[in-house]
Length: 263
Image 1 (cartoon, rainbow, N blue to C red):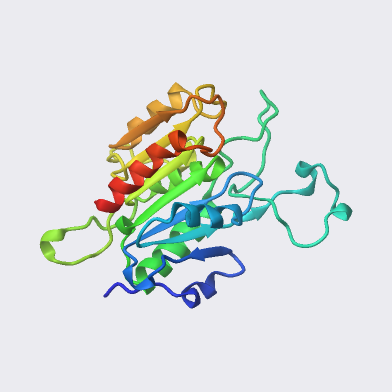
Image 2 (cartoon, rainbow, N blue to C red):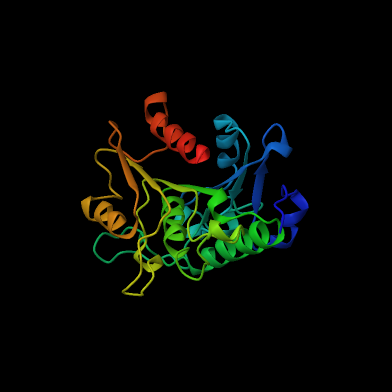
């Protein structure tokens, strides 16, 4: 089917299961790619609405997505009686469990609900089937747990997709995204296909982290290289995995975006 620019009304059927915020390019008719953004654990889509405005990527429709479940009040140090108004802190996992060894939240809580809503309803049902886009028109960007989701979806997309055959002259659907960026989020093992003969994902990946990252280690990078054909690692001078705060930290991300948008 012909590709058309999505309208806000195209996403109405997602609510209330999935809450999104749209940022269109200055000239909507020149939209050529889609950027889907996933916030970190305990945040919301609101900060990731201003982020694409600051990026101002030409011809890119940005879709900031809210986590699929609110954080329990206890994890916020609050009781139910202390919370007024709608929830403002969300996560992407199926569950919230503590590691018996560290006492921290498990980094891989399962992402089946987020996969169903984002990959199934938002990407395949809305952007592809309703609006005629291809997964190879879509870039994923995530921070922390949202970065893990971006990598996980880029891994899972290998399953159940028809590989694009340009010789047939049919746009079809490809088995990869245009690109995937994770800030400090490792690939969840639960989102790696279990087929032993699986091929590596063809989605190009950029993983950014601090020099003393608490979320990513050499084994996590090795796993990415085992599961993806194209993995670029950026180790910042700062120690932590916080969002980029200056030009030097943002430069490799912008270079990756520019390369993928040209492609």
